[in-house]
Length: 126
Image 1 (spheres, rainbow, N blue to C red):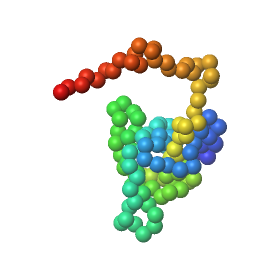
Image 2 (cartoon, rainbow, N blue to C red):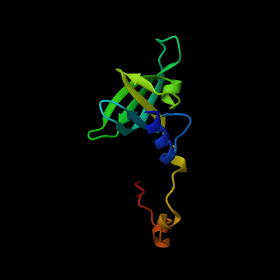
Image 3 (cartoon, helix red, strand yellow):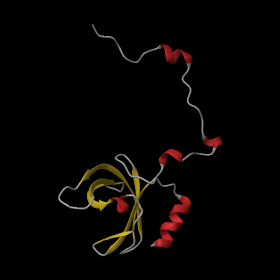
Image 4 (tube, rainbow, N blue to C red):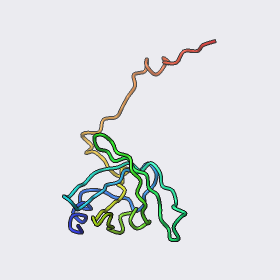
């Protein structure tokens, strides 16, 4: 698992923190290696536990999308620690979407023609 995570860190830019709205990469080792993305929809403190645990709501970007909630500690939620669920190793870490960029030849600025700038799509109703 550690080797797989090290390889992923070479090709994916990760964040050190995880927040609502982040895209996370989930890696599970068994029954076969599974790598998938999920959207973090909520992170709420689990007050029923003495230590710092979080109820993390996720939407796994699969077909069909699947909603799930995992209870994780901060090191597990931020990819600092590989953890187990049901005896299976797992890794979760937020992807840094802000630093992802396309090669400059693929980036094209969007321009709006002058006549379209003047016209409004909205109508005023009195």
